[in-house]
Length: 102
Image (tube, rainbow, N blue to C red; front, side, top):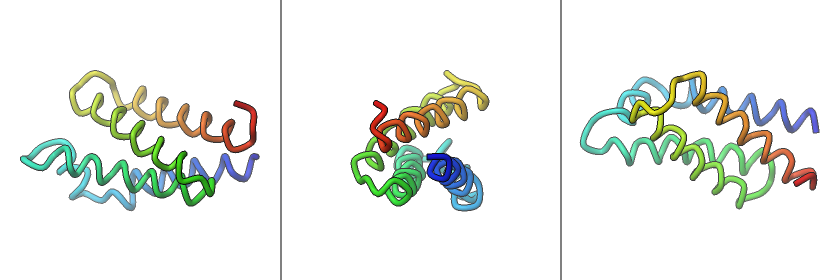
């Protein structure tokens, strides 16, 4: 369980920083295709969760959750700290699902 938890957290960091890049970081916040870029960024996270957990449904759940959480941040409804906390809570939920605790 610990290994999977660390892999989920590591994947989150990789997807949120190196894989996102400056282009997506800016494009998901402003511009005519802003929402599409946000969904693409969330899709990268969803793919990572699916790969780590081996569960496509959890990948889709991550894609949806990440889209909603980041949209709240873009609209100014959450600060960065709350945004990241919500993402980590999602990873904890996925972990509980994978190990049959939820």
